[in-house]
Length: 239
Image 1 (cartoon, rainbow, N blue to C red):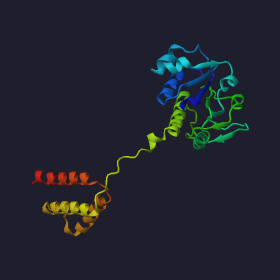
Image 2 (cartoon, rainbow, N blue to C red):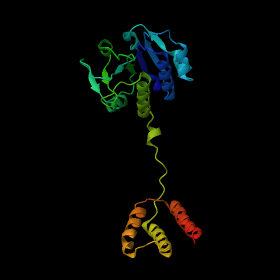
Image 3 (tube, rainbow, N blue to C red):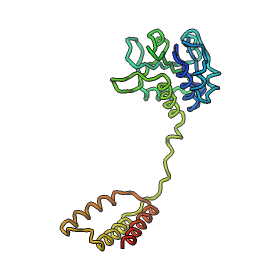
């Protein structure tokens, strides 16, 4: 399924950014990378060094002379831009992206990113179906190319690997209030022996705080036994 997703980098300027993109792609199981007119001889030494083991992604990367050829393998192309453009394209959110991918099972999707310094041109954006702006603070919207690719890889990974994110921890039965009451009574008895409730006129307020603290817990029986043992042990050590 991951083979139907591909990444298109338009006129990348730094070899190390391409290597970092390849690394992120491999982290999340993607391998289709197209590059348009890189500003250096691809791949260079920095590309390979920063790919850190994603040599297969780098070696299989296809280089094109123009954007139109680079997007040909895809049915729908999403462009990423840090700012709104004066162009007749639908701007969508990451949530919208999720809905589109889920609703179009047999579609090949391309994700297009622009040069580090200037981003995608309006001419490049014209080839896309949708424009997506990755949410950031308003004062500093520009993301590093490899960081933007990493975010998108992660978001797609979440969409197609729901099982990794839906697994819940083992649901251990919460101890009854009866058992919690027994623990509180045990604690209060020990505290009274140590003359903890001084001055006496504040005892009720202190008991209220103890109850508020312990009764809001949702421990299982094992945790409750451990807590009772700790309380008892501390009492013995201080006697």
